Length: 334
Image (cartoon, rainbow, N blue to C red; front, side):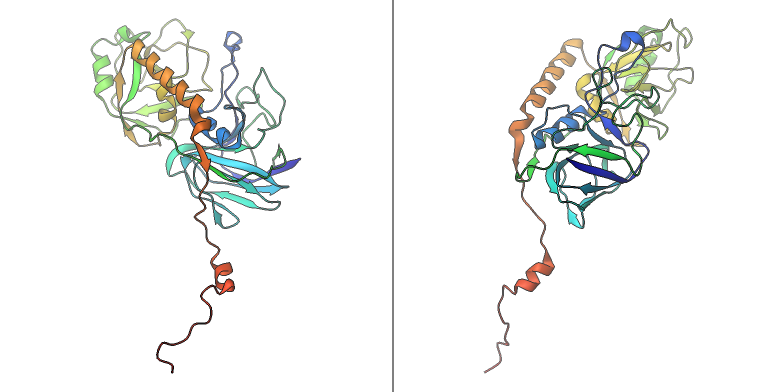
């Protein structure tokens, strides 16, 4: 058995999988990965089950040390990464030798990255999942965000070549929503909601993405009888600024919901960096279902996109020592 030691991490780094399902009747949200597609891509690189638990790394950097040989894969948001000075390409797997230090920089293109371990993360299932929900004190092997000094048990690395995966380019189109269930509480302001440019607030977290932009007025006040929520529900509280509910959300809410982000676009929204502008676009339920089927097809096909990795790293010192050019002489010497 090998281990991955956490040297340094930001506050938004935790163990996540597909989340826990069937527990909302008890008031327990699903939690799970903010970007399920990126999680599944990392696991595909290692031959794991699609939604095996991995380390979800927030926008800040992180550092890990291997104890024993283990294979890992990095997916999700683009960020600088190296193993004891050797670059680790994005969306690829690599074997860490005992003592190797994996260093990850600040996210550049997105918010969340995933560090998957061959064989998945070992832990005790809580309501069928290892996913961390810090507010509820649930998750395993630690029921909280990871901290320096934590140890993650991992399978000893098999002797397999490094792999890479080519994913479709993410769309830059508006985030698609289905209107409702209480969009009639906003009248003409629904169109203003769709026409506006929104930005993710720095005050956002795994519970909800707070949006900045023009305030959306209510027709009959901002309180409704509390009812169920889902991932992607867009509530409009008293200040008129939308909150998009994310995996650690409450299971019910008392603010009217103007729309719901379609499942196929939740990963894109989750990877939208604070301060970056975007818009919403309303689609029909049939269109949302068609996009969900397309997403499911992509998820099933991820193992078929895995290829042998091409190494772009050169050990210049070793090349110099090899003296591959032989003995150099001057062309002007007799």
